[in-house]
Image 1 (cartoon, rainbow, N blue to C red):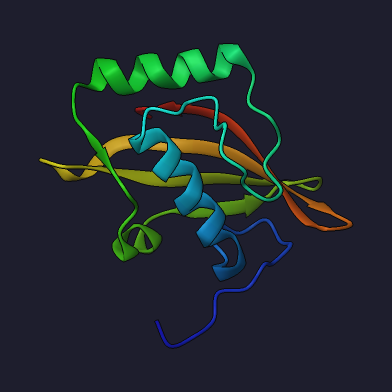
Image 2 (cartoon, rainbow, N blue to C red; image 1 turned 120 degrees about the vertical axis):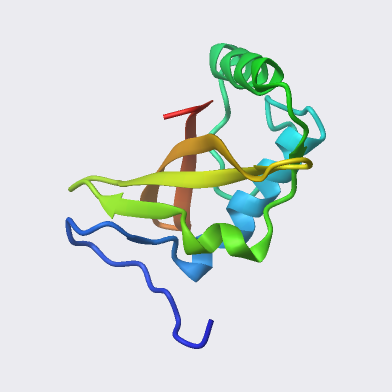
Length: 126
């Protein structure tokens, strides 16, 4: 991708900013490793509650496909939108057999003094 994708505060659906992508890759890598509580150290990640971890695990298991790490193509369809206090984020998830799946990771991103805070909301099929 030749043009840089920046963080923008307007109410237009936009691609995921470059600065957030590595964090979301780390989050999905944890899911691939069946670590739904996200126990590994990911900078800016708001701790995931047991209820959210359980929901994510249940949805992924019920989907009955194996997640894979995010390929570069995920950024072609994943989106975010400024919501006055945070960005709502939808990351398209990929599986071994399907490639691009129907599953999405829903999260919120907040500005903080140290950069950004990432709050995982759920994984689901919209």
